[in-house]
Amino acid sequence: MGGEWGQSDICPESAQEWTIQVGQDHLDMDLGAITKYSALHAKPNGLILQYGTAGFRTKAEHLDHVMFRMGLLAVLRSKQTKSTIGVMVTASHNPEEDNGVKLVDPLGEMLAPSWEEHATCLANAEEQDMQRVLIDISEKEAVNLQQDAFVVIGRDTRPSSEKLSQSVIDGVTVVGGQFHDYGLLTTPQLHYMVYCRNTGGRYGKATVEGYYQKLSKAFVELTKQASCSGDEYRSLKVDCANGIGALKLREMEHYFSQGLSVQLFNDGSKGKLNHLCGADFVKSHQKPPQGMEIKSNERCCSFDGDADRIVYYYHDADGHFHLIDGDKIATLISSFLKELLVEIGESLNIGVVQTAYANGSSTRYLEEVMKVPVYCTKTGVKHLHHKAQEFDIGVYFEANGHGTALFSTAVEMKIKQSAEQLEDKKRKAAKMLENIIDLFNQAAGDAISDMLVIEAILALKGLTVQQWDALYTDLPNRQLKVQVADRRVISTTNAERQAVTPPGLQEAINDLVKKYKLSRAFVRPSGTEDVVRVYAEADSQESADHLAHEVSLAVFQLAGGIGERPQPGF
Image (cartoon, rainbow, N blue to C red):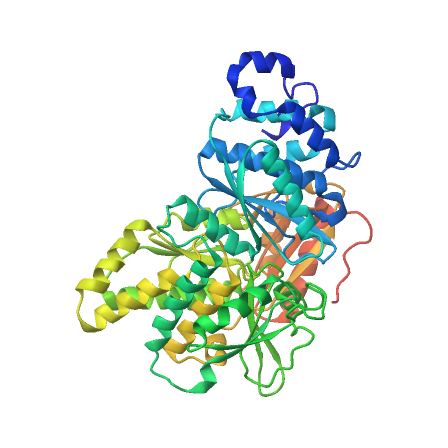
């Protein structure tokens, strides 16, 4: 649909004709008021933004008009789905001076792709075309403008967020939408609120308090079952990226303190958001965040700026840093779920969903040792979430630490029944599974929820952080970027693991991969810039480095590389 938005064909009718055509409906869309308000949230000339997986993200000072317009769009989406829609003001792990916005669909999931197109079109419309674009969206999506609309709004702790969320509210109210402003929330908390409101409270109570209580109750119930009373398992250092995660964890910690004591670092009291800290920093730099002293073998974790990603890490006795990323988190969780199912005697289909970036060792361990089927999708949370919905129990994590587990309604009912009807050990396992289901935020990846799940599993299995890390050893790998004139010359298939074009590239990669043990490599175009991303993995770091370099040379030669040829050495 992306190509249909030419300037000339946004909407053939003028606003007046449309008013006659849709009769009474125009009462619900006061076009004059929209125009008047829109001028107060004027679009900077020539600014073009794209709604991507993370919504819109850019420098905060360029976003006022986008926020106002996303308020308008949320109302239309709410009318169309006859549901509550969420608007989250955040730029996640981006620097503090950036901001962004994303819409949350009725079951807490990401905005439908056709509405991503509408969002892009509306955000980029010039002032004089605003009415036509709104009318066009309403017609294309058959929006009943008489329908009531309800929008919930949340924001992170960035200095710009409060003013920007007010612009969203302006957009919602000018078209007669009702709203509830939750104020400061983590992104996953807003997803949770939307899910609760659209399931009539079946999923939980749509308040911050309701969120804390649901998760904490499940966590405390679970940790009561743990046989080890040893104190060493129960304290955790948490780097909150100087973001919203710190505020919310502070509010929540007394609810679960009997099961876990958390020590918060980078809590926003002095440092800058995401600066030298947070999950993204720790993962990409492979070192602990600033402002956190780590003794050997202490369990530590980092949230990202809006608390929807988590990674774990520790220093061993020799002071070496060990990262435990999303792959290992998915492995711990899915193995535990599989063990519980075996204990209960239920043969439910459980699947783990990864992307091509998942370490080969994790895939091998899951398939060969745990006998859990693994599926691969394209990069991007929405692809993983969608695939995970196909199973009775679907677990998905990106290596960056964003993920959760999904349970089908049938499974939830079945486990509840088992927890009431089975005897002894089976009943205990079913009860555990029932609590684990409540502990997950099934609307979105959630650092707080995932942290409590991991802590509960480690306590129940009596595992130290080193034992968890030792489940398997990651294959050495290397990621590189190659600058190209046009990234679109590369197209891929098989969940981005094979290149279709340019001709000859995949054959070249296949030949290079044959030279190394336990190796694989793939290339994919970046979603944001004219670069091609190269991933290589092999039995030694030296081999992985060589392979990555050779593949990037092949990309440079066959896919129109620009600038300097890729050099060996890192």
